[in-house]
Image (tube, rainbow, N blue to C red; front, side):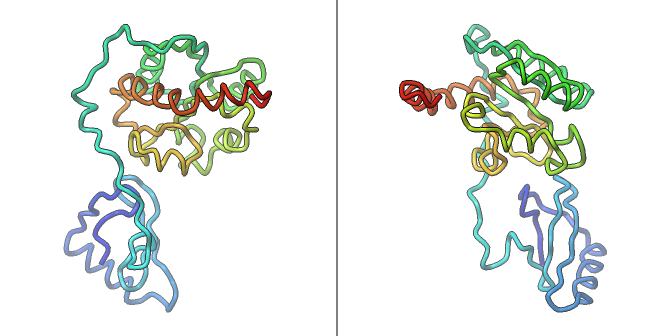
Length: 228
């Protein structure tokens, strides 16, 4: 029987009555059918086979590496003077709530000038005239999931000669902070769980230099050959 979510890896914590109802429903499934339930933690859908295993944690499934341990995030701080220089503008698409101010402040603390877009149209119009070095999107800015986001689709389909110069950050309840594999799968440079927004300045001061260390030599070389 499934005991944990294959997406966020957290235990489902089903009581005996819930387990019994789940087992009864599985017993009544037609051959080859799957039962879809929603994880109470990350809200992602979980498809469960009649034998009680999910498609992501069955015996033949390939398990991705675990998210990184970010316990250090609650302890380690960086001096305020350590800021990222020569990064002019950042674009922020975030629901209008208390978290947005915290995100904006954190992005400003590492040296960006932040423009807050209220709509996707406003964001795309501004990107026509401004070369943003950083773009931050909350996965629920347009709907209930990242798949509902037309702006994410726009970023994902952007021509690489422009996209490679943008540090793209995704924030949402489904992400594991600093989990590079999840960022890669989401076509982003960094993913942050929204509960870690209070530590976002520290996350950025770790992630941005790593990004620049990895990609700056490549971008410089491509510039030499006229491919930047």
